Image (tube, rainbow, N blue to C red; front, side, top):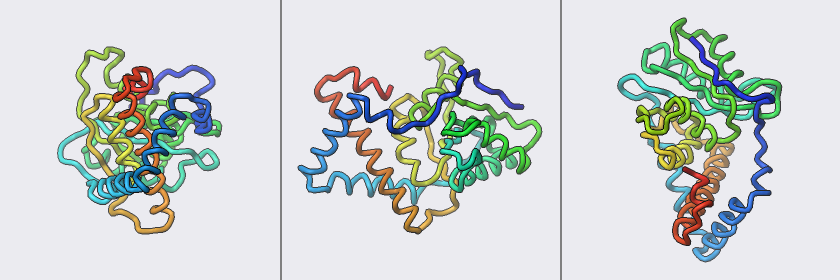
Length: 239
């Protein structure tokens, strides 16, 4: 059974450069650069360690039955790339083992002709999933924050007073720390769930971990600064 979240046409498209025109994002970037400079880089190293610890310790299975949020990733020639296929493969295992009561595939367009969620669903169908699998497609979001905002809307059915169920945040290990921070800010009872069996030890993966630490620091310090100075609009960007 597949449910698609109704979306306006055309579908949203991933465009990270749009944030460079956002005054609040640039404000947070300036605060982050100052913190790194004043700490001689030790603040950034702290975030690197945090991201690495979560990536290394995250389980790839959870007891019980879960609502599973599968984070999308930019497609390659309209098909899931290596990391996205790993996330989908883990979701397939959970579905076949009965550990996923409900799966939400998250992600709008990333430059191709179909959404990340749609491409992920097609991949799962090709690999074989149970006929009664409850899979829903969220196709409006273009980044991790929007992934979670739209997932929250699906889970609450439009009523923010409804209590959301605990969710498993399924993504690549390098991406888990950022997703967990955002989920907690948005009111989720989120639990990390790694796509990979173990933390890969390759140069490419190390680069992704370092980049994620930078993103996480940018988000976290920006929110902390906004709260400190009473910048309500900036703080509300992640809520």
